[in-house]
Image (tube, rainbow, N blue to C red; front, side):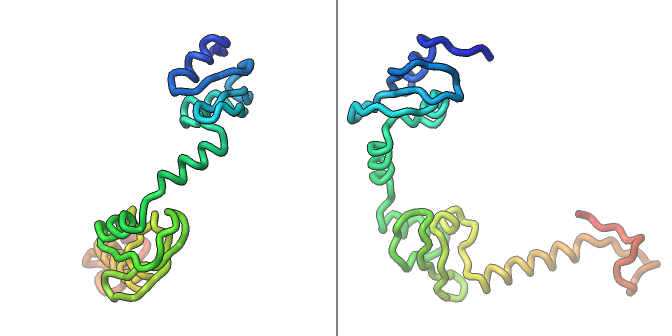
Length: 162
């Protein structure tokens, strides 16, 4: 792809709400931009501004991300929607907190994003039991037993489905 001209680069930045004020030297070079909120200048690659929508300076961007964080009640609702109960205080999607296992009522600690994505809604004990049961079931159906190897267990001639 050909290198963009200064005019084309300004047009692309403007299309997402950014303002290019420095000289554009290519997609991998940081260029000067103007923050639409506080009018402070900052340097960033054009690609980051256009594709990742990073049109704000560090301070304004950080404030915007903080305002997007969900409340304790919303976090409890999301955990309940996947069948789990949030016990601890919600401090962000990556900060570990306490949950209650829906099977055995044991309290366990996990990051909220892993629970709310319905990946890890059980404690270690119940999660391992579920995993071992699935492995056992998969192993039982993967072998083809013929009369010649009946009772001998798996041999090199047995077919295994993976």
